[in-house]
Image (cartoon, rainbow, N blue to C red; front, side, top):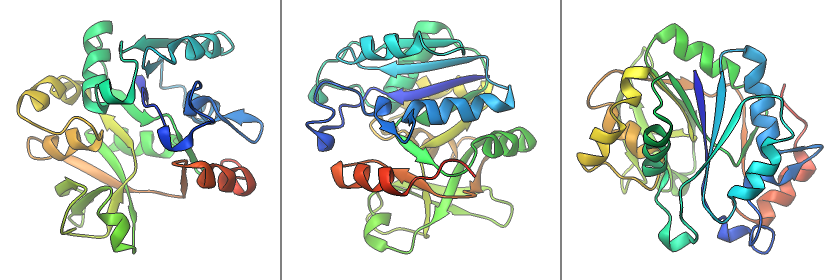
Length: 244
């Protein structure tokens, strides 16, 4: 299994911290955000390669970081150099698939979130389902529902519908940026883009995919810290206690 890490954003809301440095390599406690994610995932022993998808501006930072890691890490430079020219998450995923000739099951994750639970639970859930999967968490704040992917599910966790940034949310189930694609479904990313699925938010591909095949949504077993601005970064620095 491959792990694709989405790290090609420019994190403009975190300036000046991220004006010349990538958000996923900011430290939280004694580790970088990426170290927290990869070191946890690696404990399951299912991932044989971690692929960091970066923009051109920050690729060299990830190259230097990768040299410090024991895991096999490949850094893919998507060639963009500004927030205005970014490809978008779904196109970045397809770029990496094509560039590296990937043909495997994939864990696709945002590289800028810190979790207090192990992602190995999600991998095990997806393996048991033998299908593409996402996670979901209950969001009571309606304003926040308008800013994320929202899913409807049945009693077996099967996704009935998914919409990114809905004007009228159909449920309170929000989707964090952590996805599992089966090998066969990873091959459909190109078709999804050609069919007109959104390409900026990574969940847009899942919103399209669940209309093509069965996708499940596991309830998130803990909390995540979304580091979107300086205030939230300061908060996670004070509150984060590691993975339970």
